[in-house]
Image (cartoon, rainbow, N blue to C red; front, side, top):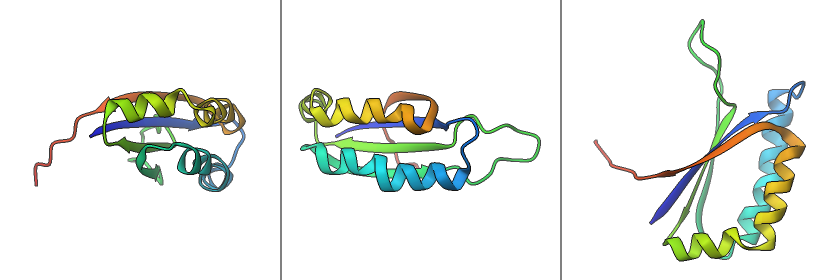
Length: 105
């Protein structure tokens, strides 16, 4: 399985509620409905951080595919182009990392 995490920082001046609503109702369906090989798509919204710390991002998406071929095919799709362009609508920054998961408990 191939898993990526994509961190997102909300657009300056956008409320946390509007950011979450846009992501879940407008942005997420682009991948959910358009990525043919997508296995899972989980949105993790940051609700708070420890006192005295700044939040490094406002949410993390976790997307999974059965294999790299499925991921590569979806990243070449029209949906990927639309999703990338749509990020500008509600984010100030984002980044993608590939994840290897090890269950400890």
